[in-house]
Length: 404
Image (cartoon, rainbow, N blue to C red; front, side, top):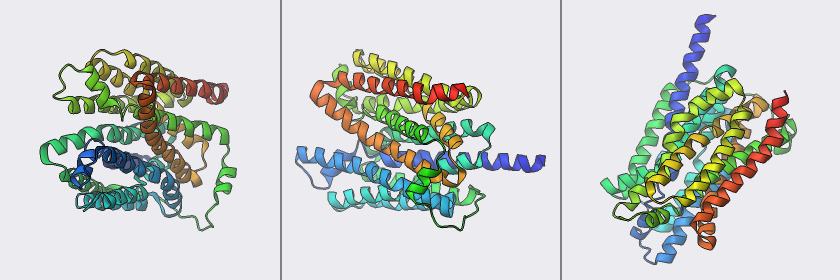
């Protein structure tokens, strides 16, 4: 009995390690294009500055919108066919598509490949479902906490990695190197991920049936919206970070590198703290960690509007990453607890979609607010959204679960 338990322990730990690497690389693959996008579009023959900006926005945002649409579909497929096949499909598919971007003959083929990338993705949904369903309750918070660092860190550090590769090797190698990393993720997933999956031979449930089978509908909605707000908060600064760092810097010779670091440092903090906060959520309750993290994150956004140099901004962004590190794993832990195992993949598909919409929404919101009211208001409005979300969580989640 003890041998069997130890074997199961080794399997979920190995799965977690492989899935972490795969989700990290997938996150990089989704976001590494950000700093090189305008340069690559220009290299593809577009010279009008305004058109480059418009096409850059379409190329970046469209991937996340399409991913938001397809994540629930791949989540349903994971429930039906197993999570490992979805991991293999997504990693190999993205590897091929991203590598092909380096051969794009014009900007329209390139945007088409970005749309295809969004449709193929689903690695994060399958990973989250696999770890959530195959990890025992005592370690669920830790496992999901560790896993959440991969996607967030990959997405936040991706722009810095993309900028570094472009600086060292050129534009096209950004796509080739990322594609190669995803191919490595495919190989190690095929070799090392183990899944105990029994297919249910019954007619797939409709969206209405899935919704009716949820025991905690309102709680699921609140948690999904919270994931949307968390991701939105991380990305409101993305479109204006370079402009803000330029305003704060006396020497602008390394502004691109400093901007990348200021954006990515939140991901580093997330890697450091998320597993520990995942363990804490197992001990004191995920709802307590969610509420405290939302309040802390909302307050830390305010002083970012008053910094005098880029290094002060980096410190505050690092602190922000520490607070947000407790949110994703705690939300995912609660979703796992309130969702029947048979539809876990589909529900996580919807929550991953909420995250993708947050990336798109945050980028749009940050740019629009900065253009209309000024950069400082980006931080004020983001802070207000997080604090309002905290109030909602207090009444709909914290008070309800704290009584039980």
